[in-house]
Length: 429
Ligand code: NAD
Ligand code: WQD
Image (cartoon, rainbow, N blue to C red; front, side, top):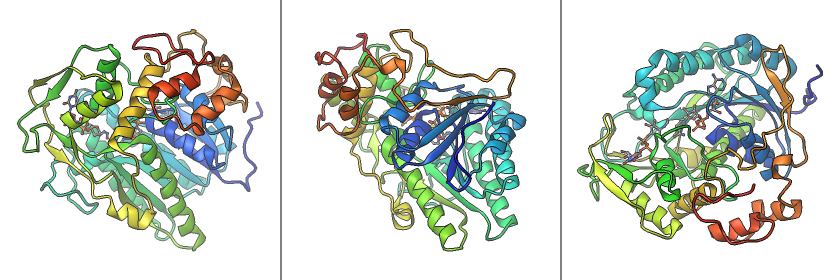
């Protein structure tokens, strides 16, 4: 089969895990800049629909080729490398549930560590040494003080998931040292990504009971779960509940663009970064109660909550010092906590069941039989799943509208301009 690819003189970026929560939002930012992307994802925790929507949100700028493949399948992965020449890789693919990682640590080490080794070995073999890795604030473990955490703070993850990130970071450091002046590896240590694209068209779609606070809060708000459990009310924080550095998912996505720019300018200057960590956080801490109150404002009513025991392994306060990213990447989180909650609520009301479509229409794909990976080139036109929304209506709401309330966005989305539907209503997309 002929696989559409970019000519070799045009830069193509490999994005593993690009259909996931952070990946899909980053894909929108990159496509909007006209980038050419190849996405590898096995869809174990995501939907291909997110990619179709990302393409639309980027107004069909750039190009996107999707390979449904597992990063543990080294043969399938190499086929992808044989078909495209990559200038850089953003590596999101991996497993991320802290609790699950304690139950199946082998699975986590295999997917996260072995999977990353597969990717990095092929990058080396095919002579691409520009790599952005999804690391996590979790590598810092127990903060030694209440002060915002700098990148040179001590590392010591507290659970198997966190240790996969810590070990991968160390492996990447070793690789950079082994080939001096060749590698540009950026370790992005995300703090707490929340929210959704401001259009409400893509967002976080967790399987089962959400592990993280805000997807759980959103599901309580929409009526899928009865009450928010507040884990611990006796931390040494302003109101006793846990404090975190929440960062809007679009700000986080833009952090990847900034990292890519940093690598590009370094390469252009005939230099190399080696392996460098950067925090992606806002530098501001909010408590669980702050989050519930702010989300209540977005929803327009007080959300129910109850205090329960602390979660095992939780810490009181984790806040980033993002100043290095601001200085060296020229990146800074810009969106407010209210933006995070408004956008999350917009996504949740427009997609009460996540990417499952109420019409039952499945996303069209072109699977490649008898292959290690199915290769799908996403069309540049709107797909059937969204053609019920007139094109002229869809385009402005995504990017140009000045509407700033969930109701206004829902009205803009609806062909009949009907008012925003309530919780659990069928929402045509
Ligand atoms: P996600 O689960 O939404 O995205 C991960 C993607 O990787 C999914 O699309 C999944 O299908 C894919 N994937 C998983 N295993 C794969 C495999 N073996 N082969 C191919 N694809 C595979 O998670 P996310 O929140 O978007 O996180 C992206 C990355 O960022 C992960 O590495 C995660 O550990 C890291 N991270 C996330 C957070 C967070 O709070 N969301 C915080 C810090 C770091
Ligand atoms: C936030 C706050 C909880 C759920 C986790 C991972 C970390 C990183 C980000 C990937 C805490 C409280 C939560 C609930 C609650 N992921 N909470 N009720 O724990 O900071 O970090 O996600 O790298 O590795 O550990 O995020 O969203 O789970 O919790 O009260 O139902 O909300 O105690 O204070 P956390 P979180």
